[in-house]
Image 1 (cartoon, rainbow, N blue to C red):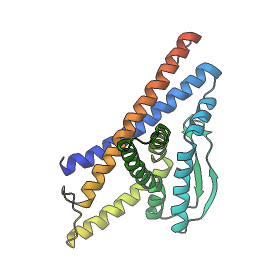
Image 2: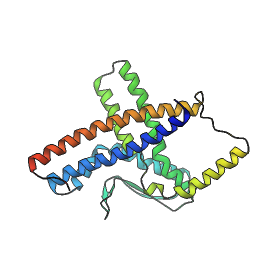
Image 3: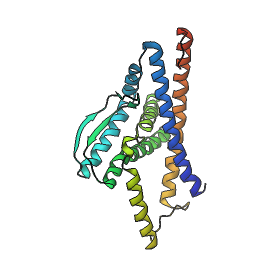
Image 4: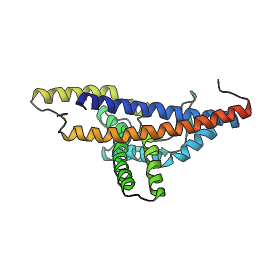
Length: 231
């Protein structure tokens, strides 16, 4: 696989995870509307299932903010509904900072999520090859789904990105002019790392599809039983 295809695959799989997460929330919120006439029970169920991932997500923000000496405040791990009815499963209050530190704080859950996915993917592969007990494999699969859906970067986390990306591009341009290069050749460590990331992201995407199909079937069944449908 060429370096360009590898990078594009990473971006595409991340985009698919984001779309799948939105669809999964839609299915649970829609089922909740059909049964209870409100979205909140479905979001509460989602938040309980994905609570470990939400905790990891918010602690990643908190940990990096503390390292970078940005003041932090209240941590929230239960869902909040805004006026626009956009779900918000958790948050960490942080003081205003410069674009680079804000960028790193916002990116922290994605980096920690990728690291955890790589570890769990390796454990899953080892356990599968060694015929590990089913419950251990089930925990690892659950971990992949939870972390994969919780590591995504929210709109709030991206507020510093425009300025930060401009600064990063300028630094990269100056480094390349000075002769520094980042290799993406097939024998480089970065290429191998992206290949491993793509593999575990691909598995997570497939697991998400299975969950979406399950809850989609449940929602259709409830629609037929209740004779109601979502608009």
